[in-house]
Image (cartoon, rainbow, N blue to C red; front, side):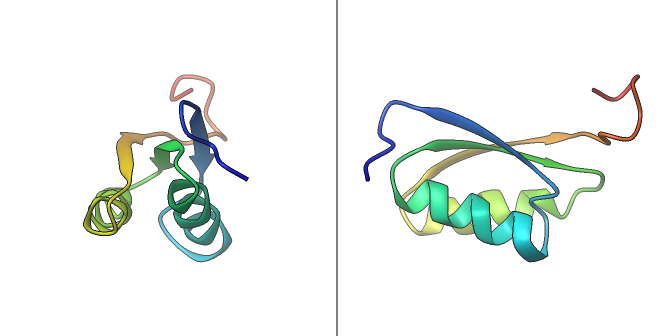
Amino acid sequence: MSLEGTTTLVTGAGAGLGRGIALALASRGAHVMVGTRNANGRDVVREIAERGGRASWAQCDVTSDRSV
């Protein structure tokens, strides 16, 4: 299934399941907005770009109203 032309937001994308979801969505053509509490999300964005995908990073803590 192609996700070309879509944008997705994946929270917790810096590691584990969230990282895997972000990589999978990007491999299907989605632009992935990587949300993490720390800067390790930048590594995921770089990995997506190296694989030919598109991604952006934003620091975000979904447990904090001020952050979201």
